[in-house]
Structures are given as structure tokens and as C-alpha cells.
Amino acid sequence: MGKLKHFENYIRSDSRLNTLDKSWQLWKFRKHQEDVFNKIPSYKRILLIWHRRAGKDILALNYILKKSSERKGLYWHVYPTYSQGKKALWDAMDKDGQKFINAFHGQKNSTEMSVQMSNGSKYQIIGSDMDPSSIRGSNPVGVVFSEYSYMKPEIWDVVRPILSENGGWALFLYTPNGQNHAWDLYQMAKENKEWYVEKLGIKETKVIGEEEIKQLRAEGVSEELIQQEYYCEFLNYVYGSYFAGLVDLREKQGFITELNLATSLPVDTYWDIGNNSVIWFVQKQGESWCVVDYMEGEGLPLEYYLIEIKKKGYLYNVHTFPHDMINKEYTNNESRLEFARQTALVIGLQGEIIVQKKQSLVEGLETLRRFIGMCKIAKDKCRQGLKHLVDYKRAVNHKSGNYLDFPDNGQKASHAVDALRYAAIGCLSQDRSKEEWRVSKKILKLYNYVEY
Image 1 (tube, rainbow, N blue to C red):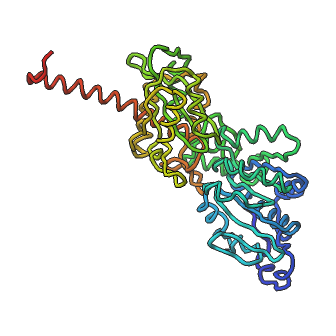
Image 2: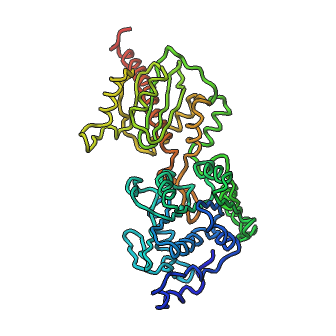
Image 3: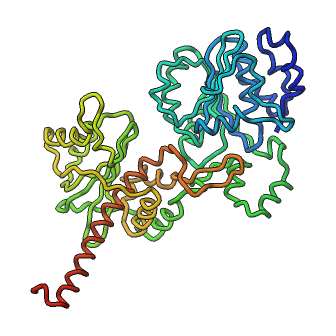
């Protein structure tokens, strides 16, 4: 990774501290960095898919320095999480022990990770894990999205109209992470002349040699991770996925296929409700659980989904919601569960509305794994939901590139996984209860307590 050239020269120079910040001019570019740095100022939307250790964040830092010296305003540097931004940039140092954040001259606020510059511009590091409503009303004129493929994509939905209104710019920086929202953005951007798009692996930058890649392979790093992180390949599944292998296996076995709905049998729905909402439709056909339909939406009210599932015309039995539906709203002291029941009554929606019992995430994911391994899933009707199952992944250590033993926080796929997790808990609990009753009856019969 490159570093700021003669870092101490501009930190110690009083004259520079008292004038417009030009510290970006001291940056010693690598060729691929210099090329893009000279090209992107004429674009409002920039997407750079660069391999690990290509110098993405340092390029972004210097680009913000340049743009903030040209236009007074608020500039954001967004990371997947607040803590990641603190580690990756606010507290980060070069190999000589100099903090990168010291490239910004001005009053620093460690609490909000911001710098108020002498010309009136403000730089701030934020995380996509924050409540989107907390940043509405802000007016950034330049935003960098670092590791966009690992962050909540909803934050771009909040920022986009702001930048469109004030003529601001956005810079997206990431390595691939399966064919998720970052893949979708790439597909759109490369066909849009308003976007500057560049994808560089180690073959293009020459920053990392093939000998080092050979060493990684010798140390046991998987080929999938190497292709993704160093050659910038968008794999058709997410490396580190919880369910990709299982979904692939079940499809090959013929359990993810076209299913016929039994119109005379009841259907249960399982929900995850929020800004992104998901509903799975499950029907018991004989001894088999069949996932027969799927629905999702964004930014729509609860009553919309209740009306839409009624329109499907299924014979409903139970609608299962997440446990937090029992929480009362501050504004009207009414829970969303109560609202859902009242709405269902008004529109004539069949079925009892209940909440799912609590289960730890670890237990729930294992229950879901067992459920996927035994149910049938309608391939076409559940196509988008299946994609989310494949995309659902473990968290990653961005420093080492290794995956951790818990889910990535805030990923979009979690809504579909959570809703199907509730289905797994509900369905397998029913099976277990019936089996326990059969076993208990056999025991009671043995001791002559039950007449047959």
C-alpha cells in the first residue's frame, strides 16, 4: 500500500496549516491510482472495484481532501459499520506510525469522527449500520462508500436524492462479494455513461505478484476467496455463505423445483417486517413441508402486505410474525401485532395472527439448515428468496480476509433468512409436538392408561 509522501512536512508547516488544505498534492501515486485520480473529477458517480491492498481508502481520503478544498461542504466516508470506520481510517496509521486522519487540517472531534476544516468544509466517518432516519436532513456534497459490497445498501437510497439535489458526487469502493447489491450496482453502472467504472485485479495493477498468490494457496487460503479478493471475480455464489452449498444440493436432488399448490389445504405465512419486508408461504402436503411462494417489498406499510397476501387467494391458517411485533408504538400505545389483527379483520383476511417464540440466532440457523434439508421449495415463485439464502453469509475480518463464525451484520439477505428461520422453527415444532404426542400415547398404552 502506498503512503503519504513526507507526511511530517505538511503536518509541521504552520503556513500550510493556516491556508487551504492542499495535502493531497503530496500523495505519491501508484500508476493505477494516478490514472483514476485524474479521470474521475469529471464524473458525479464513480465505481471502483479494486482488489485487496490496491490502495482504495487512501485514494478516497486524498480525493476528499482535493474536493473539499474546491467546494465547501459536508463530506462523508461511509463504512459497513461505525467501528470498522474507526479502525480502518480514524485510528489507522501508516508504517511510520503517522495517522492518516492527520492529513486533514482542522479541529478534530473523536466522538463523531469528524474534522472541521479551516475553509469551512467538514469531513466525517460514519457507518451504514446506523439508523438511516438519523442522517435524513443532512446535506453531504461528497460521499465515499468503502466496502460497499459488505454494507447495508439502504444508505445509498437515503444519500442518492441528496446528492442529486445538490449536485454532489459519490465514490463506491469495494471488492466483490458474490452477486449481491454491489453486483447489481456494477451491472447498472457499466451500462450508464454517467458513471465512471473500473474493475482492477492484481493482473492489472501489478501491486501483488503471482508468487504471493502461490504462497496464499500454500497456506490454505481457498481458491474461491483468492479469485474474489485478488482477481475481483464476481462468483455466482457468496463465499462464506451459510446455505449456498445446501441450496445447490437440494436443487440437484430435485427438491427445489416446480410445485403444485394443493388448493384444498391451508397455507401458513411467515414474516419479517421492517423497511425491507419478507413473507414466505408454506403448505404441509402429506408428510412434506412445501415452500410454495415468496413475497418481498421495501418501504411499504404493513397493511399493504396484508392486502396483497389476501389477493393471492390462498386458504390461510396461521400468519407468524417476529416477536418484536408485540412492542407498543410510542405514538399510539398500540403494538403492530394489534394493528395487524385489526387490519386483517377489516379486510377479511383468513388466518390467526401470532408471533414466533424466541430462539437464539445460532439455534435458529441450525433449525433452518435442517428445514431446508427436508422441505420442498417452489423454484420460480421463490427465486428471489432463494437468491437471498445463497447470499446470506458469515461476517468477514476485513484485515485478514477470513470469515468469522457469526453472520455479517445488517446484510440485506437477512430479512429473507429471518422469515424462513421463523418458518423452520414453527414447522419443525409442529412435527416435534406430533411425534412427542405419538410417543407419549405409546407409553401410556403400554401402562394401560389410554383406551384404543
